[in-house]
Every structure is written in C-alpha cells, then in structure tokens.
Image (cartoon, rainbow, N blue to C red):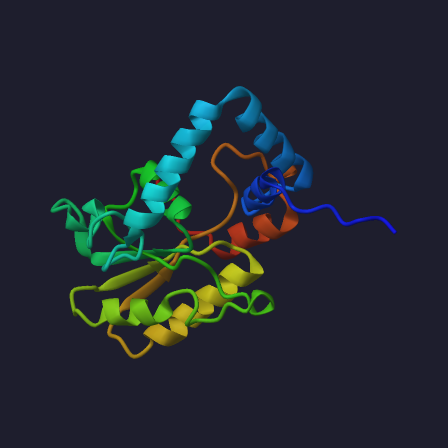
Length: 203
C-alpha cells in the first residue's frame, strides 16, 4: 500500500496561488518555485503588501469601490457631477471608463454580476447598497455600463427593475462597430446592434 504523502508548505503555497484567476496547477507551481528560488525579497514584499491591503482596504461608503478611507477620493472630488451615476461591474471597469475621459459623474461598483449558476443574485452583487445610494435625492440619471454578456444583460435588467420607483433617467451604454473597425471584420451580431442603435448623422 502506497503511503499518502503529507502536504508540505510548498504544496500549500502552490494551492494558495491557484486562487488567482487563470492560474492552474502548473502555473501556480512555476510561480511558487520562482519566488522561492529567484525572488525571495519580492515574495516577502508581496506577502507584506498583501497583508496590509487585506487589513486596510475596504469599500467606499458611496460608490462601493475599493478604498482605504470611508469615502474614496473620486467620490470626494468637487469636479465630479453628483447628479450622474455610472454603474459598472468591477473596479477594473471603472478604471477603463476613467481612461476614456468621457465621463465626469460618479460611479457605483457592483463588485459582480447576476449569475444564478454561481449563486449570485441581486443581493450578492450589492444592489441593496445601490438602492440606498439612490435615496439621497441628488441623482438624476443612472448610466448602466455592465458588460454585454448574458450575465451583464441580466444584471442591467435587474437594475432597471429596481430603479423603477425612483424618479430617474436610466440609460444604457451603446454597443456597435468599434472605432477604427472595418465592417467586413465585424461579427454579424455587433453589426446588427449597430443598426438598431443608429443615430442621426451630424454634418
């Protein structure tokens, strides 16, 4: 009978690294061996910063994004329009919106999307906090910027239903042909949506 090998610290390190998205057993093993063999200083810094981040980073009381303070710098900025709120799925989506320099309002980060298969419903993705945010009476328009996936569309629909009782203008970001895109390389679904969401030409 083959004796079962006891789990070692290396096994635990590899297992811990597998919590990262897209990291499988082999990738986690390579990362673990690299840190132990070539960059113990980097590993120590990673461990220290990660511990500090877990201890000090929380959710902004207004937009639900990550922050070290009760209210994040973006929400405190006097240059933002408090009557406009853009709803996104994740902090990464918020950063992409900011990189466009096209939006000067506020945000609300859901920290997820409705996905019944993953056990994520409206409560799990922060929609109760969104309702609380709407109650301040300052918001006039909500822009839904969830992804154009099945889950993103379900989330968008749920948000619309939840916000119906409020006196708000609700809009959804458009989708269609990308800037610089050529029609022959655009998929038929995207092209069809571009036709549906066409607007008057300006000359």
